[in-house]
Image (cartoon, rainbow over all chains, first blue to last red; front, side, top):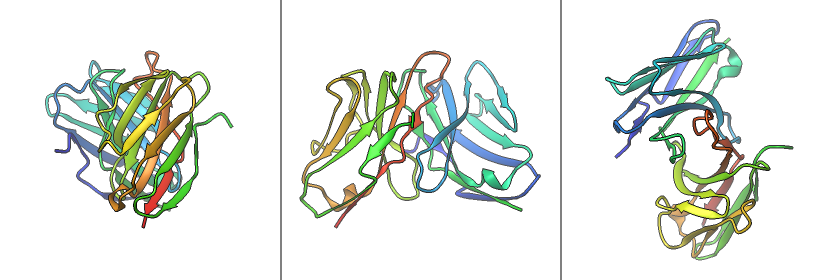
Length: 112
Length: 116
């Protein structure tokens, strides 16, 4: 039973346009949400996070939106750059000290 | 470098062989996590240490899997009598776990285990 879902295995976006990566979760106990980015042959790297007390968090070109009632979050990348091409994992945990549950990932390709 | 390191990067084992995977976390990081990542999937939690204490091992798939962190720094994940289904990338991550890090974890590059 997958608690964190990323229903789009892949996404292609033109350079300079917006990339929107979606994530749904089933466990209403999740309170912290994170996005990680992964290049081939490397470990995931932390990108941005959001607590359930917020509905938006922004860091440069990256913004995460959280809709708790819909159990849905999204990552927006504006403008998209070719270096953003990677696999993006959505992740969630019940507390800031609890184990993190990862989604299956979405592979983003930004086309020059 | 100051990041999380893992060794070996690649390991090929014959079915039934025991393997040991090593993780060197970032110096001073209290928490250490092990994950198993199958092809095309996200990392799946295996176990978690806070210093030398193993606080959660609920993700270990069988009693063939054993992890330790005896001095609260380097950790070893041991898999006994490896099976083909153990083939995966094993990721180690460490974390300061001080607010407001929101559980931000720093991952190593992983060890790709192939069991023949």
